[in-house]
Image (cartoon, rainbow, N blue to C red; front, side):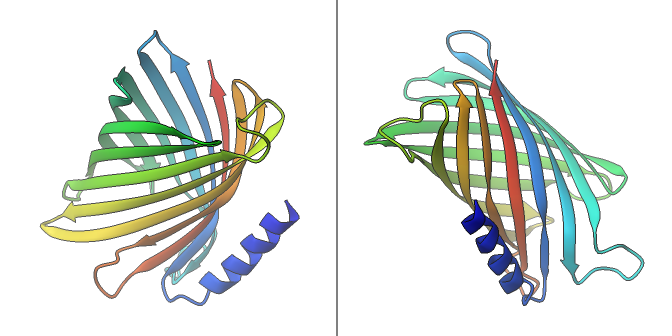
Length: 222
């Protein structure tokens, strides 16, 4: 844990040098409900607290609670993968944002690890803004730090890399996210994960933004 704290501090110091950046924390509670043999429902509540922004408007605080998300996605197992759809409701800056989600995912079991691919499209509707369309691809790798599988009271490593294609107002842009997390399996139905979440947004153009978050998640399966 001390190495994770040191790495977080050094990384945060480095990203403060960028012209456009944010540093904060993303806590989340993630729950899974097994509805029957093939259907599963995932519900997630997630917040974002900012501790540092550069630049930021003079009339606003550098530190603020930026947003709160509630996301629900239902998936159905189909062959080696799963198809699904869902909805996200976001509260930010005094207004609501609505997002509709469609996705397909597939998981591959490797030797002492697991590789997962997720393909997702979504449509975001926000007051006074044009509809935003996104195409997303995420690859995830999970590996136990002890033995061949993640057993209760054991740690595991999780790495995520996600790519976004974004279209809004006939203008296209790109975004990349990377997440490195250390997880602890409390029991078969409960896990906790914490890690570094780095995002590069608006890659096309001169106003590229760098965002760094400490990601803390609680996971429970009913």
